[in-house]
Image (cartoon, rainbow, N blue to C red):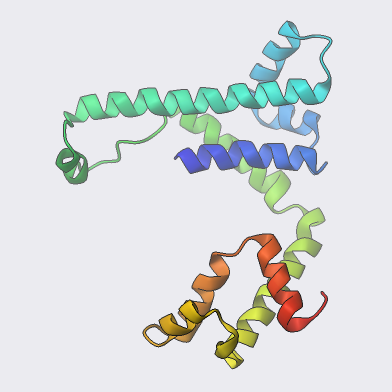
Length: 187
């Protein structure tokens, strides 16, 4: 849940910074953000829009994180949990947002899917990333001796495709592009 909250707020920020999402779209598409933005406008009417955006986003993150903590504490109390064994044996999820905050989070996630994640503006980047990953995967399948020694050792115990997938999954964007240029040449 902490990751969900963090990613949603970070993705809103990234989408806004990259000019893939406008302030108007975010305000119109995410009611809880709009509420916090209006509060910020009241407090800091002369502030730059980006600063207001940052403050509203900070308030949104704080709102969800606070709700997660409070609601999780309530779930733990209601379930009578007092030990790690109680947590492990509890038949239901204990860590969760309360229903109103969960609805807000889901709405924000739906907004991100509709307006950012599947944005046509990202298609060239997605296509490039898919090509880079595919070509590196095929390269290491054909030449596993080019994998780092620790992954070559793992390939002696686990299927090579699984090992290569694990290696790629752990890469940052910059690192995968470095590897691509090293083994495949300029993009």
